[in-house]
Length: 506
Image (cartoon, rainbow, N blue to C red; front, top):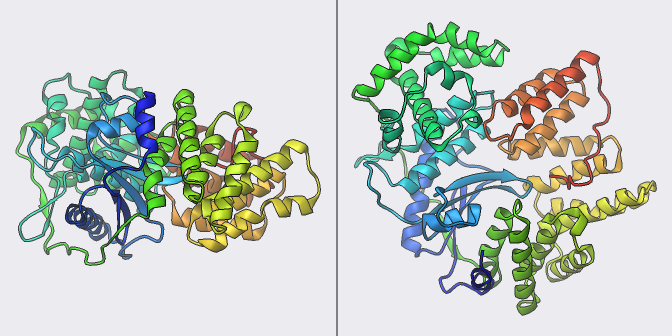
C-alpha cells in the first residue's frame, strides 16, 4: 500500500457515510439515502426469508451484523489483501472485534441472475445465519453448499422469494473443468483443494449436491439422516453411504443432475419488506474513522501495512484531538502489533485521551482493562485487589452496553489471565456472550472449554464438533475436540489455563 493511499484515508472522505439500522443489520455506506434504503430493505428481506424457511421466530438480532459497502469490488479486494487485483469481491469475518461483512455497490455482471456482489454477500450472510441458528456440526461441503444454495435467492414481482435458482457463476467449473468425484467432495475439506480451479469445482459440486438433496424427491430427508449420523459420531464415509447409498451411484446421479433443468421453490406468500429501517448520517468524528478502522481490522496479518495504518491514525489523532474513536483505533492498532514491538506508553496515552473524551467508550474501556491485566501478569502480581482494580474498566464497558459480547468475554478471560477460576458471574457472562454471537469461533471454543471444565462434557463436545467441522476454523477445531475428549476420558475438570503471552483475550 502506498503512502498516498494512506494519506487519502487519513483525510475525511468527500462523500458522507450513512448508517442504516434494520432489525438484523447495521449497514454503512457512502451511497445516497434512497440507494441505501433499497439495499437495506432487500438484505433484511433475505434475512426474513431464511427465518421463514428455518422457523426462526425472532424477527431480528440483539447483536446485529455490521456491513460496510465500498464503491467497488476492487476496493474490497484491496482491503482484504492489500491488492486491488485480488479475486475477492466480498467477505465475512468474525474475530476478537466481533463479526462484520464487506461488500460493494457495483451492480451488473455478465452472468444471469442477481448481481455478483449480492450473491457473495448472501453467501457470506448464510454462513453467519447458519452459525447463529443451526447449531449442529455440518461438514465443510455442506457449509459451503448451503451458502451457495441460498446466495441466489431473489424476489418475484409479487414479492415471493425464489429459492434454489442456479448458481451461474459456478457453471464454468461444473461444465468445463474436470469433475470431482462425489466421495472426494463429501470426505475432503475445502482446504485440501490445491488450486483455484479445484476450489471452484469443489464449491460448484457442493452447491450441486446440496441442490439435488433439497429438490430430488427420491432423496427426501437424506441430508437430515446424514447430519444426524455425523453429529452422533458416525465415521464420515459410513454416514454418507448409510444416508445416500453407494457413493459411485451418487456421483453418477450428480453428473446427470447437472445436465437437467433445475427446479426452484417459491414461497407461498410474499416476504414482507421491513418498514423499521432508520437511516442517519454519521457524525463528523465517526465519519473520519470508518476507513481507517477497516484498514486496521484487515491489516493484522501484514506487519508493514499495520504500521502504516497506525501512523495514519496518529496523524488523524493530531488533527482531531477530541475524537474518542480515533484515539481508540490508534490504541487498538498499537495492540494489534506484535507484542515485542508494541509502544505500550503510546497505547496508554491514546486510551487515556479516548476515555477523557468519552468515559463510557465501550471498546476503549475493554482495551484498557486488557492492557492492565496483561501488565499484572507480566509482573507476576499476586494481590487480588490489584486484579480487581485492573478489570474495573471491563465492568464499566459492560454497564455501558450490556448487549455487547466483547466486554462479557473479556471479563471471563480476565480471570484466566490472573490464573484463577472464573467467578460464577463471569461464567454466566460468557454464556450470555455466546448466546449473543454464537458465530464467533473463538468465543464458541472458549465456551466449549468452559463447559468441559464444569464437567458438562456432552454439550462441550457437541460445540467443539461444530468448530472442528467448520472450514473457516484454520485447523484449530480438531485440536479443541481432541482436548475436550481427553478431558472427558480422564475426568479432568477445574480451572482453564491462562492465555499465552500473545493471546490478548481474543
